[in-house]
Image 1 (tube, rainbow, N blue to C red):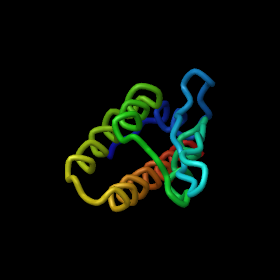
Image 2: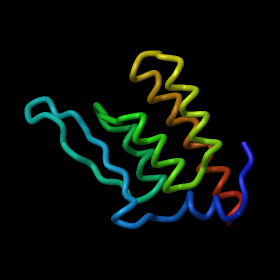
Image 3: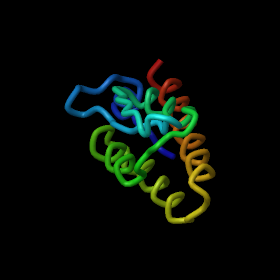
Image 4: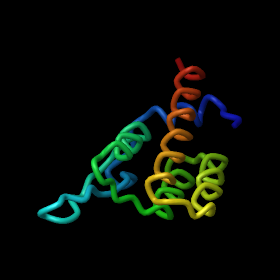
Length: 109
């Protein structure tokens, strides 16, 4: 995947309150607990929650519109279209996002 320095900076930077990503974590006794993330890296940590609740369409939209990474968004769309198990889909997206974060750190550091 190609990446320029400006995009790499957006990937490693925090976003505003308005541009935050909201997902959740399923709690056994209390239901879904809302989790707010203010960076690409924080979104990746959502995938490690015990039972993450992530709406893939909203994640794709956030990656494309807030982060500005259309190429990564398209790859996530491809993973979601495979219609695999929810947790398998999460793992594939997490792996892809970690690779993009590492790539961004190399370019911007």
